[in-house]
Image 1 (cartoon, rainbow, N blue to C red):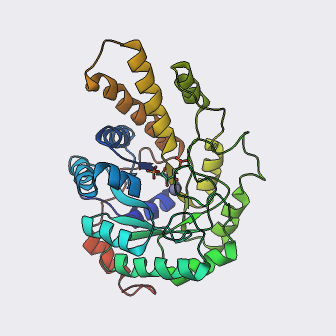
Image 2 (image 1 turned 135 degrees about the horizontal axis):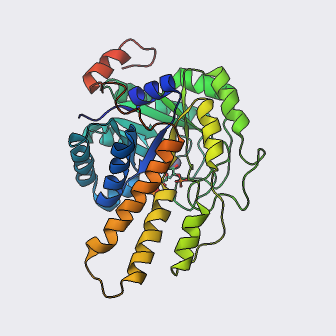
Length: 338
Ligand code: G3H
Ligand code: 13P
Ligand code: ZN
């Protein structure tokens, strides 16, 4: 089936009251694990590529791989650019056939320095105008995540201001809004299980009250399961004690308008645990397929768990995927359009 757009998939998720997992992909095994999971539990899915993924795999190469996965599949699959650093990167992704892009104007193009509000509105609006003219969806970000370990973050946390969020959505016309509520990317998010004052779930409720029609996005939403950390360390790894975002908090967010939930680290941990264990248990094995098959299965398992926990399982067949042409018509005449 053709690729779906973020806008349609999140509109449907809002109707059904569930969240859709957005999983990062860098190689074939991750992609097959993610799409295999979505097929098995019949969930719509967002497959997202960071700039790091595009440079690791090759932008043209990876987009063909994802398009092939969608062609062979009967579930809605969105091809999304994660953390576009500047409008040109988003335009390049749109030209490659991405059906959704994130313009992360919360940071300057270096991906580190927090930007000012006017800059964020300006670059995001430029991307929305160009994207909507082609039926492509746009995610923006307001506020900054903590953590710099993966290169997407300033290290400073600036929580999203609900009143500014209202103005931002109005001025930019974004389809989805990433909010900063105290999460960060990577495995080392919290040194103890986060409580209400560490994770500002109240902001999500407040933004949802002010912007009931806006789909919110939670970045840095890996749960960092302790059993995966333990398996990695038991198999020779050296990860420090750490806490992720509890699934119950994400579920609370979903009850209040979170529709896209970004998960990368949990897949990385699952793959690493499987690889370490398989390599240790089979020291004479040298066929890469013997290692990558359990790694692919591990990615699939963690994705199936999240799809079920976010409530998306069973919803893949609820609707017919709209083409970019149809989405283009829907956008024509909206306040922010080309
Ligand atoms: O947003 C962060 C994702 O985890 C992607 O990370 O830039 O290392 O591919 P990456
Ligand atoms: P995690 O590092 O928590 O998986 O977050 C991924 C993410 O937000 C990608 O944009
Ligand atoms: Zn992110």
